[in-house]
Length: 150
Image (cartoon, rainbow, N blue to C red; front, side, top):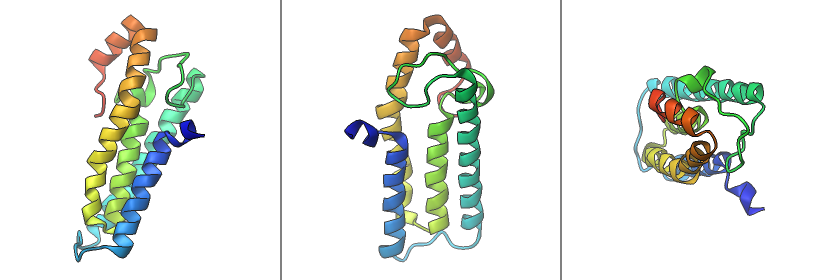
């Protein structure tokens, strides 16, 4: 049961719950002000959902696991993975930042770098180590050509 709790969507959901609660019950009189935050928030959330869809399509095409901590059977370097090595994690950060803006949860902006740190330590580094061991030269080439985030 615990292994299913240690998944990126669960960490994202926890950060979103904290941001929502902060905005609802402890706004602290802070505000981003204006409709620009709603627009920017909507664009970030929409962009994050598009990134997830593009990445999921690549996983499906490659017929490999999308679940972290599982052994991949193929290395994906096409599509959105030609631009960023971690589009789904980047999408998680975009969704969190977007909803923080939309909810006007100013203090919760601190959750974005915190979630980045958690995702990198719990998922990105172990996944890249697994890819490095499994696809040695191919991953080394890919790592030199494509940035981790953006």
